Length: 291
Image 1 (cartoon, one colour):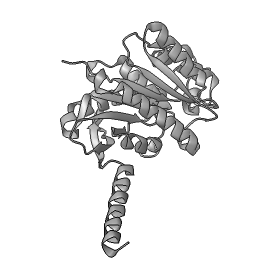
Image 2 (cartoon, rainbow, N blue to C red; image 1 turned 45 degrees about the vertical axis):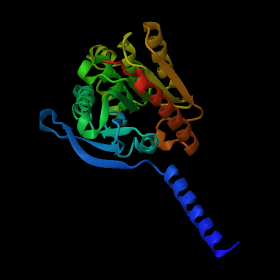
Image 3 (cartoon, rainbow, N blue to C red; image 1 turned 180 degrees about the vertical axis):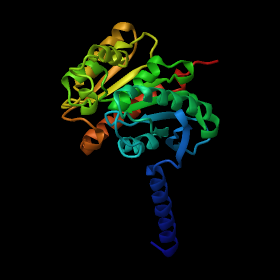
Image 4 (tube, rainbow, N blue to C red; image 1 turned 30 degrees about the vertical axis):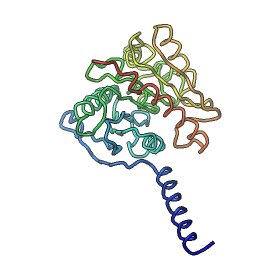
């Protein structure tokens, strides 16, 4: 083989390797941090965004972190979901919300999730996203907040789909039976004269008690070995939804406990693949009504 042939071969290998490298890279993404999306009582609430740089408006996901309502971080708790969503071409927004410091504040963060949905929708053109293809993804306590936001919110806060990771859907059962409820909340309720009054309020904040026929489809992803929020909570919620005529699916992650940050690489990959595939179907342009 002569020098000319070697030169052509080298050029071909270089081009082929460049194409391969490009095809396996994460799509180009523009990141924006510390966006103020709401100011309840003068308190700034922030979100971070990762926006694919395509020409067409992208489908979007709003992420709601967990932490038992009293702690958690938008950049830490849901980090394992960032790359699968970006790789699949979704825009995503990870939000902070008001954390509970006493039982009287329990549930206020639902308003914050609704505000985040409204903000993302109203800035859809700026972010180059499709306002008709937005989903909420919540993990743990964030799943309860996401579920209640779509169940009680109006049209301005509506979304196309919800993914709920190991979500507490029956708060009354949890406060009686699980260590998932923070001690400061349980101790302020159980055994007190106002216990029944508070439990009635928790029932109103339980997704399982607020199911309706026209709610968006839900995907429940839950570890089979979750000792804090039993997988039975997701199964019962889905059963209640189906009886009401709504659409849902429970996807068990075999052997996984509570918190995707603590799952094995295999467990994360299995859950991420399921989440992305389900969202691609539910947020497909074919599911958007034609005006």
